Amino acid sequence: MKANSNRLTAASAPESIWLPILGTSLVYASIATAGFFLISWLVADLQYAFSGALAAGVVVGFFALGILVAEIAGRIRRSWAMPAFLAVFVLKVFGLAFVLLNLGLPGWVDRQGFVLGAAISLVAWQAGEIRAFMKTRLAIYHED
Image (cartoon, rainbow, N blue to C red):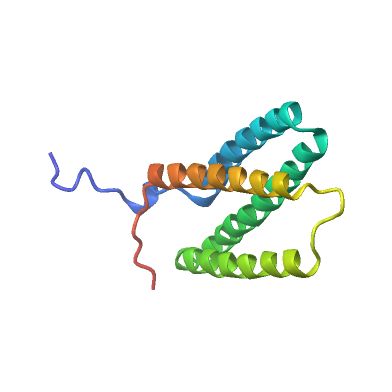
């Protein structure tokens, strides 16, 4: 038996960790958003449900953008993925704040439904992202 038989080699490392994370996060957020939409439609009204769905779409779009940028940067050079992910995250936070503060929401949007929908989809997305990260095993590469 070889002493190093348990080591993970670069050849067996996954090609991409970002796309499975994106997929898991999308599933979690989609399930939570669908649940919120149905419950709020039954309990409140359709405007409330659509307001939450709009917010969920914004949350999913912004978070998916960060993961896709990390995927692209990681394909160019693996060590660029995480810095690109973090840089896009900071830009998204400021960009979203700027848009919401300066442009506002359409008149038909129920603000409480929007905030609640955003919070539910955000928590679900993060739960999916954390679960996917926990399942991922990263190989450490020495890049010259």
